[in-house]
Image 1 (cartoon, helix red, strand yellow):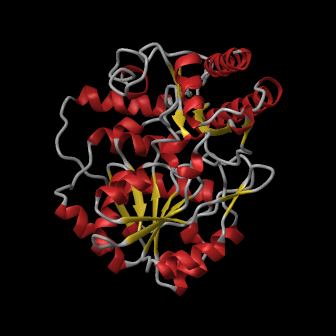
Image 2 (cartoon, one colour):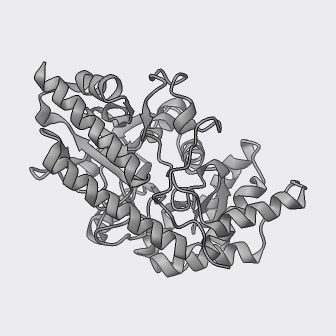
Amino acid sequence: MAERNLNFDEITDRRNTNCLKYDFAKERNKPEDVLPLWVADMDFKTSSYVQDALIRQVEHGIFGYSEVKDKYFEALSGFMKRHHNWEVKRQWLVKTPGIVFALAMAVKAFTEEGDAVLIQQPVYYPFSEVIRDNGRRIVSNTLVKDEQGSYHIDFEDFENQVVKENVKLFFLCNPHNPVGRVWTEEELRKIGEICVRHQVLVVSDEIHEDFVFKGKHTVFANLSEEFANLSITATSPSKTFNIAGLQISNLFIPNREIKKKFQKELDKAGYSQLGVMGLVACEAAYRDGDEWYDAMRKYVYDNILYTKQFVETRLSGVKMTDLEGTYLVWLDFAGTGLDDEQVEDLIINKAKLWLDGGSIFGDAGKGFQRINVAAPRAVVTEALERIEEALRTYQEQ
C-alpha cells in the first residue's frame, strides 16, 4: 500500500464542515468573508495510512471504551527514537486529550491559587489563559529581540524572576511559538541548571518538535537525568499529522512522584480513557506516516522560503522573523508606521484575512501578526498578495 495523500497543492474545501478555522469567523467577531490562516492546523489531508486506519475503525461500527496495547507504545517510541534520538520508557507515559489540557492539569497539580507560573512572552496564548483562569499569577521572562529581529533568553532575568516570585512551575515552549526559535542545547542547559538549582518543575511543550528547519530539536528531558527528573515533556501527533481534532497527546514524566501527582489531578478531573479515534490515528501516524511527514515538511519549508522572499521584496515596512521551527510565521509591522490597532484593521478589514494578532501573545507581541503557512501555495500566495494590496491602499491614504 502506497501513500496517497502527497499532493499538497490540492485545495480541500473545509467550509461547512464545522471547521473552527473556516466556519466560525462570525462567532469570533470577524467578517464572514475572511481568508483564515490563524489557528495552527494545516490545510492538508493527513497521511492516507491514518485515513485508512480510521476508516477501518469506523467500518467496525462499535466505539466503546478503548485503551492501548504494546503496538501503540512501539509506534510512539519508535518515532521518538528515529526523529529525536530519544529513548522513552513506557512507565513514563501519560495520555491526555491535548497539551493545553495537560498544562491546566499541571497548574492545578503543582501550584496553589495565587502562586506564580513562569512563561516567556510573546508566547502561545493558552499558556497565559490556563494560568489566569486557575487563579495563578503570570510571570514573564520576556524574550529579548536583537537588531536582526531574532529572539533570545535573558537568563539573568529568568533566574531573578524565579527567585523574586518564588516560581515552582515553568512552561517552556520548545520550539517556541510564535517567534520560531529552536532553542539550542546550550540555551536549554542554562535554563535547566537554573530550574534544578531552584527546584522549578519544567513543563516542556514540544508539540512543534517535528517542524525544525534550522539547527535541530533538543528534547529538554533528554539532556540530563537531573532535567528529566524535574520535567514533564508534552508531545502530540496533532500538529505533525494534522489530527488536532482527534484530541490526543502523549506526555512523558520520568519522576514517579511527579507522575503520581499529575495522574491524581487527571483523576480529580474525572478523565480516564481517550477517544478511540485519536488512539488509532496516533498509532498509525507514528508507525506508517514517515513518507507523508517527510514530504509535507519539505513542502512547508518551501512555503516558508517563499514567504520570506515575498515579505522581503513586496511587503514594504514588514519584516519576517527568522523562522527556525514551526510553520507559524511571525511578521513585524513596526516599519509600516502603523500602530497595533491600525495593523489589526489592515489585516482584518482591508486584507480580509484572519490571522493571530500579536497582542494576544502578550504585550511584547504588539505590532506583530502570526500567519500559518501550512497551506497550499496558492492559498499562501493569495494571503500575502492581500497584505500587499492592503498596505498599498493604506500608504496611499
